[in-house]
Amino acid sequence: MGTAIVTGVGGWLPPRAVGNDELAERLDSSDEWIRTRTGVRRRHFASPGMAVSDLAVEAGARALKSAGGGPADAVVLATTTPDRPCPATAPDVATRLGLWSAAAFDVAAVCSGFVYGLAAGAGLISAGIASRVLVIGADAFSAILDPDDRTTSVIFGDGAGAVVLRSGDPGEPGALGPFDLGSDGGGADLITVRAGGSRQRLSGAEPDPRDQYFTMAGKSVFWRAVQQMAQSSETALNRAGWRPEDLDHLVCHQANQRIIDHLADELGLPRERALSNIAEVGNTAAASIPLVLDQAHTAGTLRPGDRVLLTAFGGGLTWGSVTLQWPRLDGPTTDDTRTGGTE
Image (tube, one colour):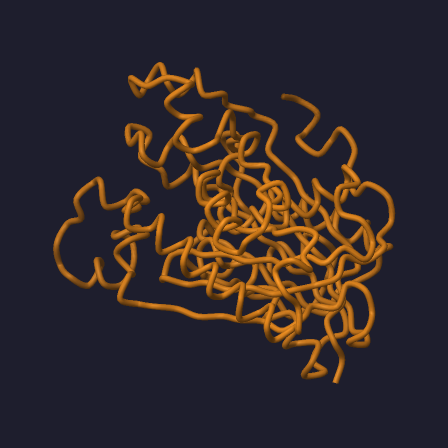
């Protein structure tokens, strides 16, 4: 059985950058209020006419280039904002990347989606179904946010990140370590879009217009996210035979800067070891972890041999963690076209 090895990374942000001041005018808020509560200074929104597949294709192409080019046997797309309810978006992404006849499917685990996608890709490799897998996290939450809801519209941004996995040996740098995955459907209403699914459509009732938007019970989610990611992280570390102090970097889902800080505290890590890009891109949902990896790799923050822990918490409720030792990859995966060349 092969082990999944990270061999390429890439990311992309849509060109339109939206600062706090632009949102504050509409929401009767302020840049200071947004920054102190979320850590976000700006975020990127998809332009009219864009879809999440466009973001995914850009990030996927960069990851494949980082991996030296060539095909992939499978494409796993983690997203909560697919182009359509049916069919899945991944086959379209695969075709547009020239990956004809590759297996392709979506993973719906909200902000935990990328870690779940990595587990699915690793499983395909371990089972001998694929020798090379492209795993993408892409979301355009601007499509499902209530523009008048100050609790959600200031936090989220759009973007995509991706990694290429190949089959290799467990001792190689870049090998994905033991996973920990879990869920609790009892918290389904804490992070949700109530309308649009079979439950609402078959109810016979017209949905409240507000039910078409994403909602989140922020206070309830905050501490559940910290505690569940901490427990999951400790499980993954124990399975890998690592201690928290062995970590060079913690890469957690970029939900909120305070959650990132509290998680580092729970694990007994200096806060500076928790990589963060939320100030510049906001919470990009399933894209957040691979975007951090791409940006940290490009900046030289992630160095070959660094011990890294990935952990996430999202709707469902879902959570997951995995360890890896950062591999030696080719140089920066993107240039100024990372954000379409504009800011």
